[in-house]
Length: 342
Image (cartoon, rainbow, N blue to C red):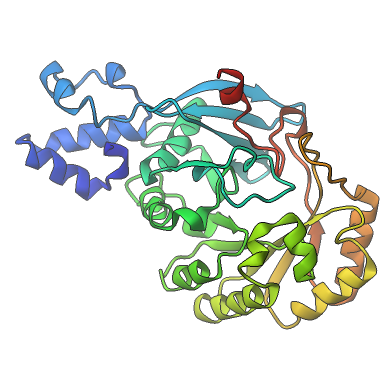
C-alpha cells in the first residue's frame, strides 16, 4: 500500500513505473490529505488505473460523540476489517488514541479489545491512515496538522506488531509528513520484555508506557496472561535499562480492580519496586466491560491510592475518564460494530 511508503520511497515507486518525480509529490499530497483516489483531480485516469490496487482504501464508516466531547471513529480497511480510534480534546490540542492491530491476542481480562482474539496486524500505512483520516475530519490536510499527540493504546499490543509500529513512527514524525514530534507519542505495552529491549535500541524519542495493573505476579496472571511469560521483576528491570539508555521517563498504567490490586499493601509494594526510577503512575479506576466480571475501585478510593503513592515518594495521578458513554474509555475499545454486521 502506498501509505506504507516514506516520501523518498514514494518517489522511487513513481520513478520505477516510469513517471516524472512531480507525480510523487502529487501522490504524497493526496495520501496525506486523506483523499480518496476519486477525489484526486490532478492525476490522469491512466495513472489512477495503474495505482488503484496500491492506493489507500481506508475510510471512516462511523463516528460517535461523547457528552464530554470525546469522539470515537470506526475505520474500515480495504479488506473489510475495522478498528476504532478515539479523539480527545485537551487544552494543548487534540490527542488521538489509535489501534495497532485488528483485535489482540494478549487476553487481558479487563480489556474489551481482546475478546475476539487477534485477527491481523495493521501495516504502518494503516496506522498512519487513522491519523490522516481523523486529521481530515478535523479540517486538516497534508499542510495543516490538527492532531498534536498520539497514544498507541487502542486495540492491539503495539510491541506484538513491532516492525510495523517502528515504521509508523518514522512515517508520522517525518518533517514533510504529519511532522508529529516523537516526544508527543506514547506507546502502551502489557510488557513484552524482549521487545522493550529492542525498542530501547531504536533511537526513538517516544514515551514508553507499561500496563502494570498488579504488584504480585500471581495476581497479575489472573487478569493478564502475559504475566505467565514475563514477571513483574523482569518488566521493571527492562524499564530501568530502557531509561538508562534513552533517558526517557517511564509511565505506568495501573487499573484499580476492587479486591484485586487496590489495598495498602499494593501501594507499599508498588512504591518499593519503583524506587529511584524516573517514572509516573497513571491510576485508572476500572471501566466496565459487560463481558467481564471485574469491578472497578471507586474514584474516591483511587484518589486515596494516589495520595498514598505520593506520600511514599512516587509521582502519580488519577487519570481522567473520557468517552465512557461511547465505549471509548481505557479498556473499552472493541470490534462491536463488526460483530453486529456478521
